[in-house]
Image (cartoon, rainbow, N blue to C red; front, side, top):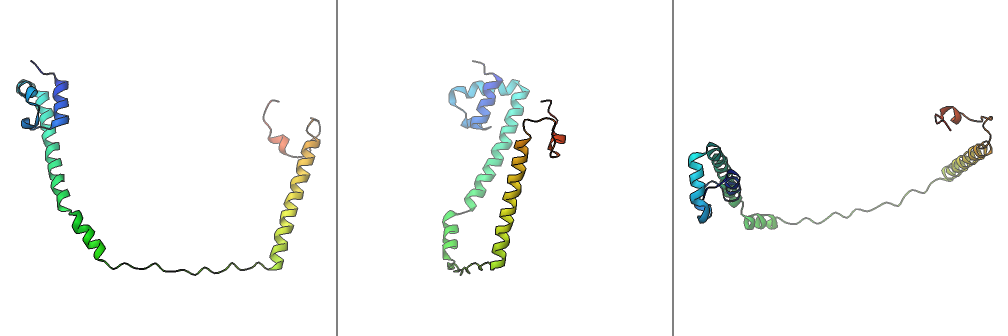
Length: 140
């Protein structure tokens, strides 16, 4: 049975470059394809490079001992959290309070007047009480 290049690529992706890891029932066909196909040899070469990288990374992971890490972290004395006293907010002076009330009232009055004048001229296309009509570019 002859193996195709696509199946060989799947073998490399799943099992790596080492023939001993390949499934026994496909090993002979994969080795036969490898002997005659240059692209298969290139795929195996790439898989071998990836295998070497993964083997090296696995060795690095074992160098980090989780138990030692936990032991060193828990051996450190735990610091207690600082308690922060919150200061009460300063009360606003009476002058500031009335300034805010007057500003709010002025804004409400101006908004009311602008709204009323716009509603009064809504149906009358000849009157123009503000510059808003100049900015209107719609054909309606």
